[in-house]
Amino acid sequence: MMRRRDRRRQETIDDVKDTARNQLADAGPAGISMRAIARHLAITASAVHYYFPSRQALLDALVVDGFTSLADALRTTYEGAAPRPPGEQWLAVCQAHRAWALDHQAEYLLLYGHDGACAVKQRNPQVDQAFSSVVNVLFSIMRRAIAAGEIDT
Image (cartoon, rainbow, N blue to C red; front, side, top):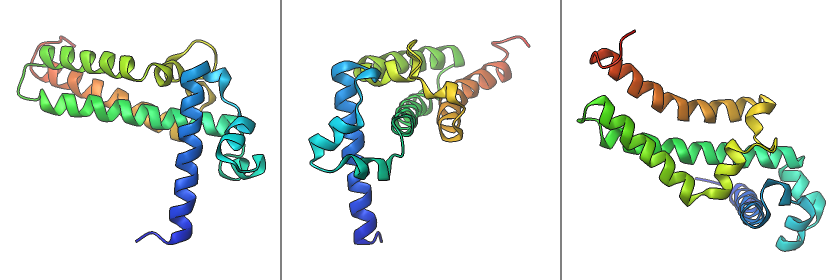
């Protein structure tokens, strides 16, 4: 059971991230402002920095959440398509990837954008792990296709 202080901390982290996601949707990655988040939440800028020491730390957290959400969507589709041949699984997972991208356009831009906001380039271990969870779904399909003889090695 979470203590009251821990619950409140998590609520504040979630509020900061939700506000950052709204800024992301409105103005892209460059539009995320720690001061504007603080104003919106009626807290001090230093309070935001208590939870996220830098703008990059907040971006990293958003990227981790994005890759985790994408991986969950892909994994759910992959598992649901398990009885089908690997080629059909691949198509289903690609369609799920596209659907996630269309439903989360701002986050997708943050994950794969060309403007340097993508935290994968920063070699953050948490981001790398979240990104790997997306890749692992794709590799699972590939391993199954190899085992079924659909891909020649």
